[in-house]
Image: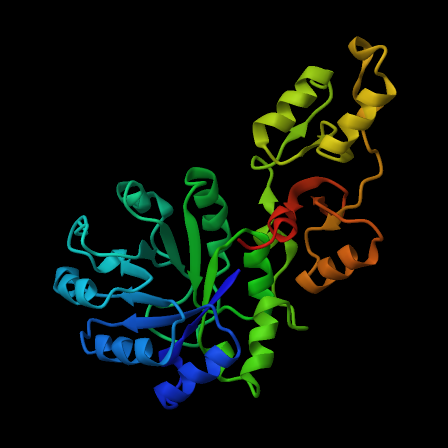
Length: 334
């Protein structure tokens, strides 16, 4: 995941901040424009000091006045705050860079639909736009899952309250970039804070159930519906590489993954028509409790001698409540 440093989250000299961030190989400079065209004076200076991409966030009820400025001084990413727009925004083709719409926690992802043909990404605001130091709104996790399902070809940026723990969750969910301000600049060491955003800090405030795929979002098969064909169709339909088996009371009975299917096929290659769930099911899968913290989750994953691609999530009664996948961590960050 890319890290975009919110340069106005500190009162330090701008050139000093830019050069220090570049020394630590920051991915982007995030520039908040609270309806102030003078911001472009800073952008021009940043261009003199650095080649790092600029991530501009415009919050204005009259966004069209920024079009000439953007034509003269292009930015790599340009985001417009949806709630401040007087109507649908039409961007001239002369404006270069990737375009995005930012939404607050009060808006749903549906608003992106009207911009999907022209815009490249959505910026989800987890705190109040343009203000630094707020706490992360965990409802953003739900919106990320919904957006990825509805607009799989578009990227997701997140701004507000991003610390080491939140950064790990966002990376795991496939978020392309996160904006960090207070966490970076209030740390004793900017380099150590940036490392935490790329890995994980020791503190944990979120639980697995805050960001997992919930029931309805994950493939689950109940008894009586487990022909080999149905198993394959369920895995294929959800495109997650597995299906969970649960009884009528939703208690976990096992998991069937792509790898389990391959093993079952090889084992029964001479009698494929006779394959049943018993030939492909893993009845003792690794699971995680829905109330486990992020730190406990990572300790669980690290304790295993084999890579874990997904985990069924259960409650204290061993009932399935969701699942986690680690596909985005495994595939890397393109």
